[in-house]
Length: 165
Image 1: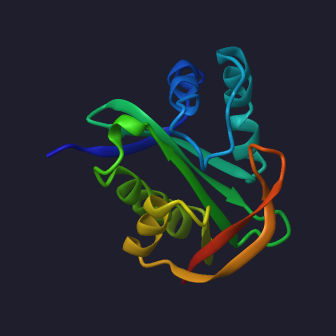
Image 2 (image 1 turned 90 degrees about the vertical axis):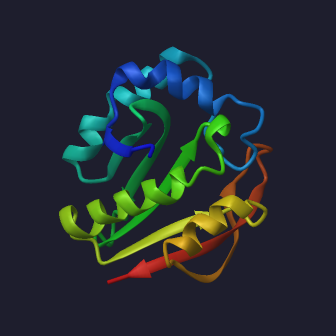
C-alpha cells in the first residue's frame, strides 16, 4: 500500500514544485512561479515563516516521491486559527493523496500548533477539493464573495469549509 508522508519543505524541492505548479491543468490554484529560482527564493523564506509562526509548509511524499505540498497559514490576529492549502501533481489526482495529507496536516494543527480552528478555502468549481474537505469532516460554512484574486486578476468567490475543536 502506498505511503503518504509530510516533511518540512526544502529548497531542493523547488524544481519539482515548479513543474507541478506550472501544469496547464492547475486552474484553481493561483500560485504559478515564474522560474525555479523564484520558487527557491520563496522556499528559502520558510524557516523565517516558521520562526514567526505565520506559516508551516510541508512537502507531500507518496512512496517517497514528491507529489505536492501542503501548508498551514496562521491567522495573524487570531493565532488559534489556521488555513490549510495544498496542491498535488495532476498525475496523482484521484488517489486520496490530498485527503490523507489534509488529515496529517490537521494533526499538526491541533496537536503541535495548538490551533482551535482550521479552514479550507475552495474554488466553487473545484469538486475534488470540496470532496477532500468533506471526507475530512469539514463543514461548509458559506460563500466568501470576491475574496481571492484569481489568475485573471479579477476577484473571485470561494467556499469556506472549517473544523473546530
